[in-house]
Image (cartoon, rainbow, N blue to C red):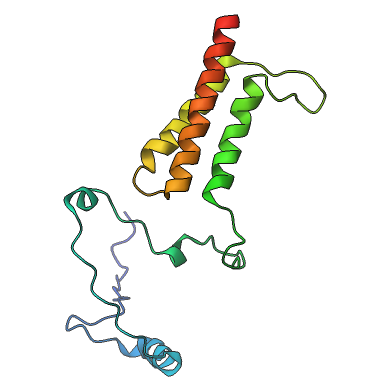
Length: 157
């Protein structure tokens, strides 16, 4: 094979020693972070989760949800749950034939309408217990109205 005369060199690139100390080549990270860091108050301990909440994985902290590269949106000006519901509802209304396309034609397709109504129901199921009363009532009302309209259209066709 041709590799018989070559030496193999192994370099440990880990940041910490086996004792848990920061290696010399990474000490600059420790110095930089302590120079700019300000002590933050200790958060209050969280109450133990209820049995129902213990099974559900906790969402990541809010700051981890922000996409990289986008400027921070001021509080109260970003997309809301209602915007998401609106975005998922519009195709259902179009496929029910209740909203014309820009050219004035109808895009009635009950199979696609049902798919989008079912997607809204998935959203309702997956967010159960995590919505405000207003958000929950709005989603329930919208689903009811879309389902009634779907049944009306299905009986006519």
